[in-house]
Length: 188
Ligand code: G1P
View 1 (cartoon, rainbow, N blue to C red):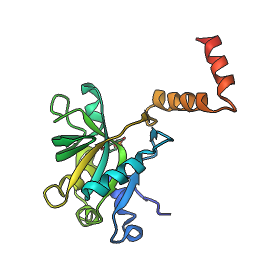
View 2: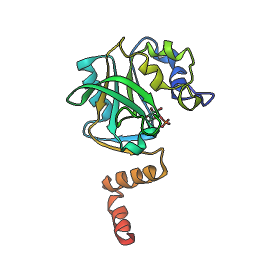
View 3: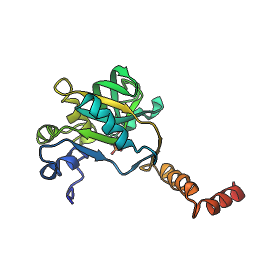
View 4: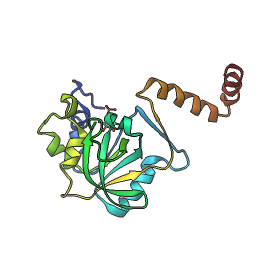
C-alpha cells in the first residue's frame, strides 16, 4: 500500500506508486467510477483489446456535451470496432472546446514510461498534476487507444450516482433485491 500524502492530483497519486510499478505496464482503477459488467469486466475487455494493439488503452464512454468539462476528453482519430486512436487527450476542457464527447471513465492500462513524465511534476487543469496531461505527452511515441467499454457505469463521485449504484446493484442481489424492489414500488 502507498498513501498519497498531499492531494496534488491523479497524476501525482499514480507517481506515488512508481516503486511498486517498476518497469512494467500497469492498470489504474478509479474507485469512484463503478463499471458494472460481471459477465465480462471492463478491465478484462481492456486487456484483450490491448493484446491487439499494445501501448496505452483507456476506457471511454460518450457523455452529454454539457458534462465534458468534468472529464478527460479524447480527440479521436481512426476507429476500429471498440478501439479508437487517440490523437489528443485534454483534461476537463472548457465548455464548447471539447474535441469530442468521449470521456475517460477511470480505467487505464498504462506504459511505465509515464512515470518519467510525471516526475517533472508539471501542473495542469485545476493546478493539479494530471494523469491526462502525462498520457497526452506520450502520443506519437507509443500506441494510444480509447476503448469504448460495453457495460453499465455509475459515477459514484456524484451523490445521485452513488445512491443509484447502490440501488441498482441491490436490485440484482437475490438476498436483498426483492425487499428493496418492494420498498421502491410502494414508495415511488
Ligand atoms: C479524473 C480524471 C479524469 C477522468 C475522471 C473519471 O477526474 O482526471 O480525466 O475523466 O477522473 O472519473 P476527477 O473525477 O478525479 O476529477
